[in-house]
Image (cartoon, rainbow, N blue to C red; front, side, top):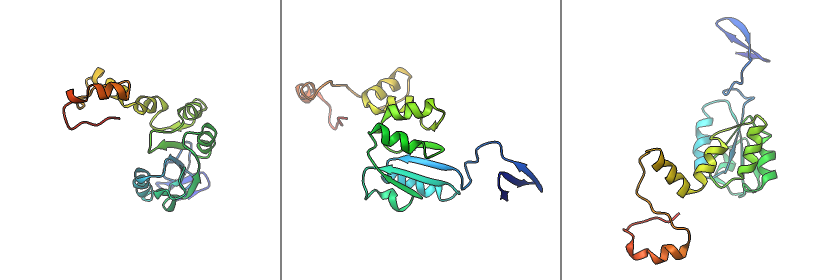
Length: 165
């Protein structure tokens, strides 16, 4: 039981001094309102968490499942930064978000998970694969091409099937 900032624990009222992630006062922000975000929202419903979602589409799947929906561009610094100021913890379900806004929020003490450093690594799939290889993390074989022209020049040397990202 909770009264103001006090919780009833073993028949004693104890003042909360840490952030309670499972209270109606906790606000989780999600950048991107697609199917992954909707799956995350399904889990948050098991707890008493306020959910905020930012997505460019007014028809985003998350719109009907979150507490607060904000329509806006995920790549716009001001939109992402101002959205991040509304919540306690910020996460993302899509990599194409404004990295600089997340870095500023984190520098100001906002919890961003995964970190902007991790996001920077995974935004470029070639860099991500190089990281895996350098750190001996198992990954599929890959080849990097700097341009579409270089890919086309090597197309007959590639083993099928392949994916270009």
